[in-house]
Image (cartoon, rainbow, N blue to C red; front, side, top):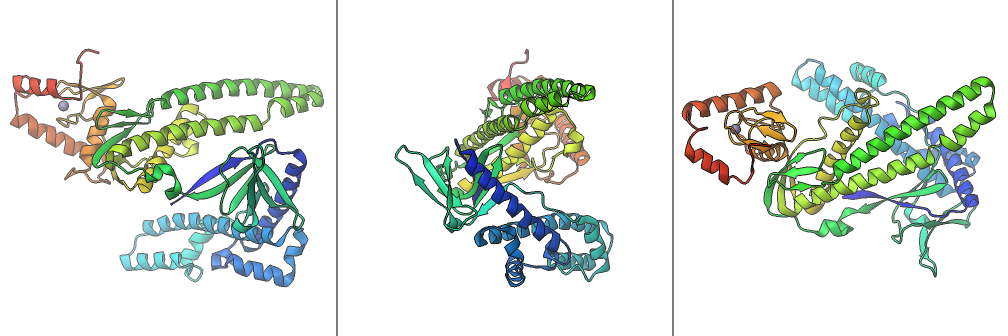
Length: 471
Ligand SMILES: [Zn+2]
């Protein structure tokens, strides 16, 4: 399993940065050419490979006009072809949906899906129409990247312990040496991204090489509930990633303040421009409304949150051979529905990171991840199944009269869903509600004095997850 790592340049001299930027600009033209000529149904859509593109360019001399070294443009052609293929694949997802929406016999549906998968859709009128509809012709927007093949770069550490990465420049045998802010040498194919005077070196590393991947998983089955003040609460009532809430709140406050400040500056710049004071407007835009510092702060915050969430998942996997969780990728709300609400956007994003961490850590450490239907897990009492009343972080079950910690109760419910005979992953919401209702009704008729019997009260007192009635 591969994961992406990023190394950053430190104190790179502006002359070198400018040279790299020029190389990236020229490679952007290479990308543009690939998108322009092969970014359609006749190109990559018909199964064209990057190797064939390279051969054609070598034959007709296309490559000469870009003024970059052979390896640089060849790698870029490969990268751009892969981008187009990804673009095509996302269109196919839409077309697959259209196929399943179209009523018809299963054999016909299967035939369409097979043809689509094998890129034989041009001959079928329905598929061709759908592909034309969903595959919007894209264009290259990448002008700040350089892809460097594994055998084209090297690293060296100088006498002061500084790590230098050498990558090809625009002239043969003239490497550009980049000082890095890490001591871990990047390996394999590199993607250099040039942003705000700094070089980001993106590369893939095999997760099995990481120390955390060699840590064995536990041997139990644990249910987890995703929270907001903490990353995860498990069915043992343990909370993991407890600093998450604080991180999100401080980031949200910071963003709100910053946005207010920027809006004010923007209005000052606009009114200056309105008065004809364009120099002042330009000054404000250049000095106070830049994006370099903003982007760096955002990246730092993202890194902190990711560490908090990944550490939380590792803690759970320390105990678990099987982690039972809600499928967090299913409930993604689109960017448009979230609007400008900072808190909701942060929450949606952390949900995605939690989903990623659960999959990633499970795969690396060999634990199983089981997704269950999470409908009503935060409202139902895990003991009697009755729907309780939420009040803050407590859940009051009116049927058995106990107050639970809401997140712990949810984690236990999630754990129990893994073995639930009636509630499957895709059982609709209203059916789940009916099943829970039926169960409580049955229990009530069988155990009419459950709430007041001394035996129940004793069990309640001994239950580890019980919390005080008065809160
Ligand atoms: Zn109950």
